[in-house]
Amino acid sequence: MKLACLYSGGKDSNYALYWALNQGFEITNLVTIRPKSEDSFMYHKPCLQHVKLQAESIGIPLIEKESQGIKEEELKELEDVLSKLDVDGVISGAVASEYQKTRIEAIGERLGFRTYSPLWHKNQRQLLEDINNAGFKAIIVGIAAEGFDESWLGRQINKETIEELERLHKKYGINMTGEGGEYETFITDGPTFKKKVEIQHLKKKMQNRNTGTLEIRKAMLKNASAT
Image (cartoon, rainbow, N blue to C red; front, side):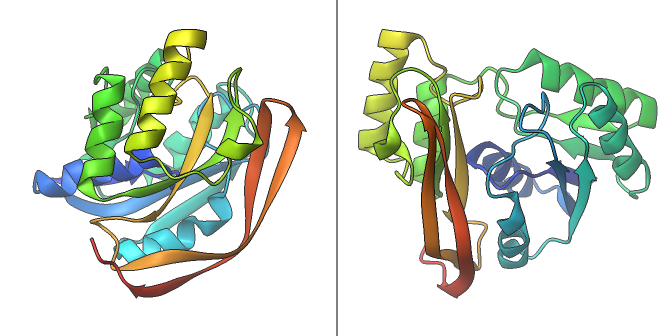
């Protein structure tokens, strides 16, 4: 079965892709929607300019489309891209967002596609541990919730980070996987990567005490992945 993978460059879309490849699906394309709006209801925003490097390392053709980021209209833009692909279905990294999952399923129904959400309602801590144990190197590139501060930007999700995220979950009620927009990630290496993404220049930008982004200003592929 041929599938397209909705791809943001973050941990969830990369792990969903990893799952699909391990299931024996043929992934014909990675599909990235680039919203102009910071308030997109559907799509990840940080570091999207570097998904080309990730796709090159993975070795799957990337399709990118710019979106105005207007609620509901951005769904038509995704549907337009998918309607032109010769695939049987689409896979996403949705974890807990009913809004995302139901709308992707609706697009699938209209196009006659099967839809897969292998991370759906997975235990939050277990999902982070699975991503880490699989060998993905996920760094935090955006924060927007109580309990976070500038020190979180650039931090890699590892055992220590997972413990700290669980403490924030218990104290502030955040979603540990960041599904509520609490934080965003970018994958620099992993089992699907032939080369790692080496970050050469970055800048932290804070909007307030708990909200900020890590801008990756320069990056390149370097060396074979060790995972």
